Each structure stands twice: as C-alpha cells, then as structure tokens.
Length: 296
Image (cartoon, rainbow, N blue to C red):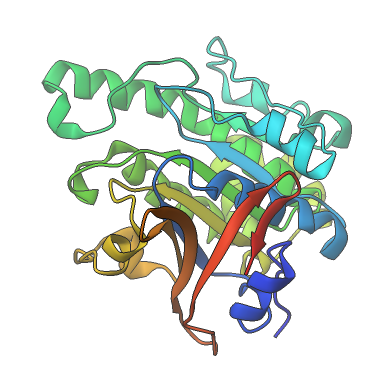
C-alpha cells in the first residue's frame, strides 16, 4: 500500500512508513504543543508525493489566529492562498463559475467562520443561539463543499482540518458535529455524488467536465488537529474514549503532550493507534525547531 508521508521521516518510521490514504488520522494535544506545525508539514509534503500540496480547513470560531500563513511561510516556504467566504453568495450556481478554472479554484486555505465569535458547545447556547448557528452553518456549507471539491478535482489528495476547540463531551461540540458531516458526506463520498450535491440541477451540463476531473476518495488523506484540555502526555494516554467519539472512529491517533523529568519540562508524542499497520509504540521526545518538529 502506498503511504502518505507526514513530511517527517522519523515520524513516518514510527508509523510503519506513513499514514494510510482513505482513513482518518487524529493528532491530539493542548494548544501550542505543535499540532499545526505537524499538519502543515504533512500538507506541504503532498507537493512532493502527489504533485499538489494539501489544503487547510479552519474550524476556529473564536480566539486567536492559528498563524497558518506565518507557519507555512517559515516552515515550508509556502505562500498560502486563501479562499474568501462570501456571505452574499446565496445562489448555488454562483459557486460553480470558477471550479474548472484552476487558477481560481485551487486555493490552499478556507476559514469558514472567521471572527464569528461563536461558542463551540451546544450547552453554551440557548435555543435561539442554536438555531442561529445552524442557519449560519447551512448558508456556508455549499462554500465548504465547493472548496473541497474544487481542490480534489485539480489533484489535491490530502487535507488538514484545524481549529477544533476542547469540550467536556465530544457530543456537545458543534465543531465536531460539522467535522463529522465533512468527513462522511464530503471526504468519503464518491466524486460524482459529491458533484451532484454541489451542482444540483447543473449536474448534467457539467457532467463531461466532472468525468474529466474524477478522483478516488480512497486516495484522500485527512488529518484532524484536535485541541485537548489535557496538557501532559500521560493524561492524554489515559484519557477515556467515549462511544461514538471521533477518536474511536479514527484509524490513527497521534498524541502530543508535555512531559516532566525532575524540574525540567519537555515534549513527547506517542502513536496510540494505527489500525491496519505495524507501528512503534514508544514515547518519543521532540522539540519545535524553525523547520518543524525534530524527534529524538
């Protein structure tokens, strides 16, 4: 089986050669632990391996910027191109005008709820706020579908989903609810059925181009960067997984956390799960370097 490299040879070795296309990988750890750097290196490696860099989908709805553009430039000499969310687009057909134009369609980054200031758990919202959130999500979902389809149609084979904030229960997270839709109804859907969702009544008139730009969803890799409450690696390793949790359905789980030895703090990662593949179960220290993560 052809593996997808993470962009870090030492991590690829721990993973028995890399990540398995067509599956979900979750990278979990506290804010600032290095998840975004790892995700960008994985996305950047797509240029070497598949001929196209991966894409980044940012679910952040409040808080500070994830600094994706800055990290991409510094780590990979990569100038991110951003797809702009257009709140005025209500006509689905308006999304289709640029899909077949590679120059316009091929964008690296989409921040769907930029500066919305939305809370991320259902328990934080009353019924009116919940309806408002669902309405906003529905309005922007076509733009998310367009972003993913446009890139996959032009050769992208990996994506990184970032910005999932910690919640007490995974089932309460509106971000994880949206991720579940994206993963099952976009990333794991046959290209022609996804095109039907996007083009709707315009499917037949675009069918020849859809056939020309077909892809196999089993070749797509997905890296979900999941922020945890837990900071220490030991706490992440012993963290219980709820039934139906995104972690329980992931093929691969990489945990990243702080370690303590005497009066010194460090960082380490652990491959907690890598279904269908041999992997090294060691706890491996790493440090954040200007070129990314350095293991060992």
